[in-house]
Image (cartoon, rainbow, N blue to C red):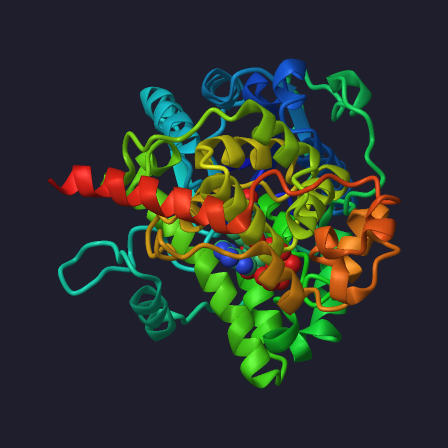
Length: 469
Ligand SMILES: Cc1cc2nc3c(=O)[nH]c(=O)nc-3n(C[C@H](O)[C@H](O)[C@H](O)COP(=O)(O)OP(=O)(O)OC[C@H]3O[C@@H](n4cnc5c(N)ncnc54)[C@H](O)[C@@H]3O)c2cc1C
């Protein structure tokens, strides 16, 4: 049997790769990656510079790993929905195997590919692997999707018999002879009009495994307490690996579960279940990428606030943690989870700016930018999502800084103009004596916390009240 293993941007690995293992067991294997202009046209690639950098590096690594196993990754430009059925027909493939995607864009692409392949009598099979459990299979008593995380997580725990991660094949057969195709090398960043950012994590399966090992033998033991500390390297930094599939989520789950890490281990696995929750939600309600989960938030009177938006994106709001998050985002393509929550709450509640603008801005800059995760993170923060924090809970950015960056190390790193302030002033530089303040090149707060809080509460109460009436 001749099989095309269609690698997409969420399974860039050779370990624990069900389609690859299945193809190998069936006979001839043709590894394929399609450079779809939906992502790879230069004007599109420029919208996701950090994700593209990580993806290209991971793709190069995949190419090398497949070559080492004796095969070759065929990289072909064109629209997936057209290229895959055409090549499968020309190459006389019996089947095309791939991993399922949760996002609407991937589901629509796969629907069209399935339709075209069916006409040619070629099988198209999608394997699970993006999530721990197949999306759509974790159901409540009434057979529906859970709307609250805790019972969802409980239902997952009851079903989590993941089986072992699949081993990397020892070798792969060489490509069948005579495959004609317009293959091309993996594009470089320059070809896509992008500039290398040396502060990003390196992509690829090997660095991903090293990150996993460094975490399980290091910060994992203190994860329960350190995960919220913005000033400590207390989290795994595996989000981009999970997004691009340089590690399978099952591999990460098992590596952590094998360590005797007590409450810290349980907390970590719980975070993986939050990831699971956001993917299952998007599977159930694809419209979540456009609309708030809580219908009462439809038509919310968000402000335009161009000057405030600019201050927030430039990291010049006068609130140190909010500004540190904005600058870390652009510099590293990453933001600590606590800082994401504070920054997102500030944009939507203090500044009353539409969460969808913040969501798009994060998708532009994050290396781990993921439709399901980012959308649920933003809706959670704005108070309009599934099992979101209540809309009337408004983070106080100063209190959050004092609690989760008590010495100010996180702020000092990303807002160097405040580095000279002592810990007791760094989260509230406006309280510094005038002589000190005059030497700081840092703005006054663009809104007063108490007034902004009142404004949001009054606006939300009015809007949600009208929706109910
Ligand atoms: C506004 C906002 C936007 C976000 N956007 C994204 C995004 O685009 N991509 C993304 O992967 N995560 C997103 N998150 C969730 C979270 O911030 C990141 O997953 C986390 O910071 C990644 O760092 P880590 O791998 O060191 O996390 P760890 O603490 O080491 O967690 C391990 C893994 O668990 C999952 N996880 C952790 N926290 C959460 C969470 N709160 N919700 C869902 N899953 C979680 C992630 O897959 C993460 O890699 C967002 C959160 C917020 C509040």
